[in-house]
Picture 1 (tube, rainbow, N blue to C red):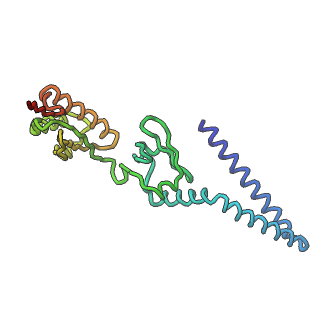
Picture 2 (picture 1 turned 45 degrees about the vertical axis):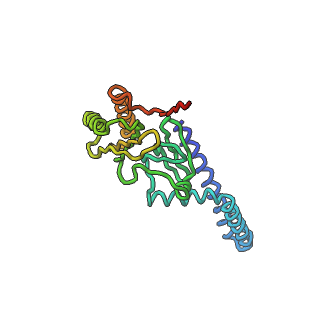
Picture 3 (picture 1 turned 180 degrees about the vertical axis):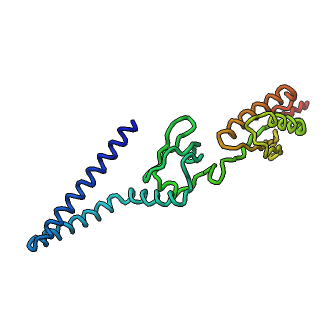
Length: 228
């Protein structure tokens, strides 16, 4: 497949430059004759007008081309950067002068025009560093002892190989009508490891609550008044 791609590109470039050389050669020959200079000038004028028409027709493609140069020098994204774009999480697989290929987590490819990354916002999780914070939210009843959950969270992190030993925080971030929202914050050296770490820690905390404090799982309370 790669060989066909390269062969197609080379054939296109060869035909394009061959046609350009033929036109310029004919124009140069016509200019060498006094009586044919007008014809040569007309031919060059026609080529110029044709180039302008093609330029207007290919305005979007030219915009992509200029965006490609801008990205090449400013580098808001690079090869292997991890992005969240169009609601999808993936890694930059290829950057060309006109489009960007993002390999999504499920092996699909998201292909976007390169000026998309100039005109629209996107998340770059590895712009400065590959290190990233991961978050796990647990919703539990108010009877759950936070100190015990925090100790279990610390123990799970200490023995997990994907934790980079930099950030570990447990906080109650919301108190709702029937449950409290508990946020467990942890760090890892890249987004892929952070995702796996979050999944393992979430599973570990849920198992801990199920085994030790099953009465603290989310529940619905109701009060019944029997009035006679």
